[in-house]
Length: 421
Image 1 (cartoon, rainbow, N blue to C red):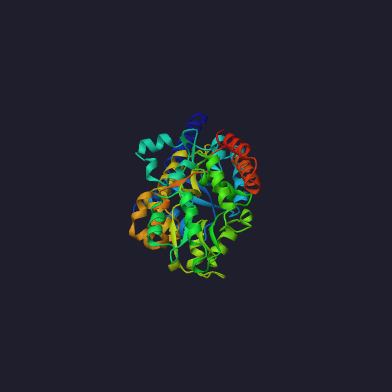
Image 2: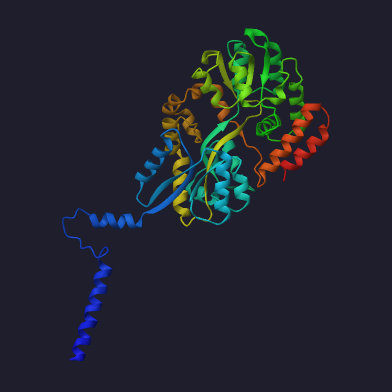
């Protein structure tokens, strides 16, 4: 009897194991369930990816993620909304990455963070993946790509770029000079001559405005005047000449973006270097704006405009690097960038879209030939694992020289050493 009872128990256990392995948590699927079991299986196999990106006041980022999620069934991206305080977001990401955490798979990075995070070993290089996919760096905004290239390796693709521009009063500047500016084929010396020529016309008081206060904006302008630090001495000398020109505001060395746009928008300057947001202020006729869109032209800066904006990268500690790459590829590619542009009004980082009529109609600036030329000629700030220290060195030495006219050689040496490390 004991023998038969033992056999019975053994058979029952085996049957239970088989039943447990063949079902979905013990659920039996009958014919006519319309694939419910298949859907459960698919859900179980879907890999969730976490995308750490700043808040978006437009519907673009959400729609972008939804489009990716619908495009395939292997991965599902969830947006971890970060603060719009850039410094706070930087510190939050740094804390996570430095601990080796995999809580974020894909990262949105300010262009100046890429070198720091890549240098620390936190980012996954994507060169080999780009090569395998036949993706060329020339397909994307040049400054954005350079910002994410550290020690010869590519670590990022563009999320959305920003860039430095020259605004000018096209109701004052001659058509010949306007065409020259729009082409980008002019020098800072040419710009200075135009500033001298046109100041006073149309009620203007000043020639050319730019950011000279000791802060990040000064680093950006030194980058532009020196052509990515190829000619630091020549760039600083030109900036000093502009600072002391008869057409310059006496307090130019205290100018940030705010002073720049206010002075230009009130009709007091012929030329101004600023970011694309200034066009939005003029178009929207914000408080205090007196000039109109019809009076304003947009052109590239002589040596190219410093790129700003945000980049896409992959956390090297992610357990789902392949999936993260699929999302980065989608967002930075033609389809993703078109959504960002048409839904959110962001500038496209995928160059082909600069000629797309739907994208152009969604962003008035893209109808300006000078603006399109500017987008195709962007330059990166120094890509360094210690960017904040590099920027501080540039700001301190440049501002000291511009304020006094003394110590040029010392300033050049300090800036060159900092930017070549």
